[in-house]
Image 1 (spheres, rainbow, N blue to C red):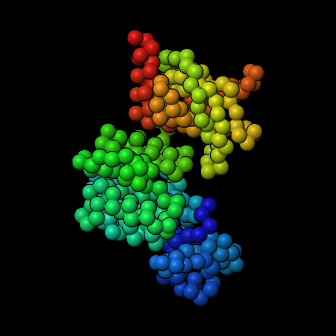
Image 2: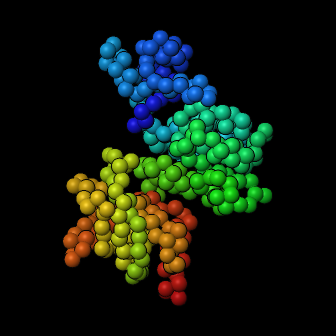
Image 3: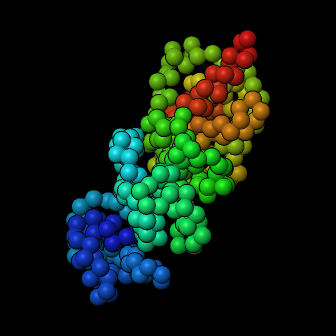
Length: 312
């Protein structure tokens, strides 16, 4: 959970107004700190909880662990698409601004976790907003998902974004996948869950030998992840078999666990998927069978292309 809350988050948690939160902060009833440049009040989560316990205050809603997503766009259809893609995820709060200047100020004054911003805005181009944010140290943990205009060309490094949402990836599943990856969310889509039972058995598998990076985590604490390595020995559009699995921390979770699987090989370039471990056994080394719980359309197409090349 975040150690500091915005006045809006603290107000929602306590069920009071922002002005009351600000007044209690100024009076010393709530502790925290101020942004030295903007003067924005940041309220200590610990002090909020102490105040609730002291006065036995009921909570309106628990927002302390949510990620805040700010969408900077004038495109109402795109905004609705973002809201629809993430509406089932209780781990995020979505806010909206129509101008680049507003996006810049909000990101500097408040604790925004992810900025989704358009290239075309009425006042300030999205690329300029990103450049301004990257020149300051006031938003060091901010992630940026950039939707460039059709006329824009450039790499992530040129634009300063963490991910691009190009024209071919503006469907809800791709958006959900990119947001989930940037914010380490788990419950952001289970499009591949349809691969169960007979579907998995009928999905053709290809024998491969692909080194992979794995991130192991429990659903209850998706933020706590252990890195490791494995070798993908066979793969299909529904799942994969991993061998020689090793976790850097040396421990596999005792309960049900999940993983993010990343491969960067000539056969599967810049490919990743989230998966549920459905089988785990020692066989000289640790062997795991996984079912993909989230596989974006572009990454599914890479597997299908690999299978087609082999069959041809």
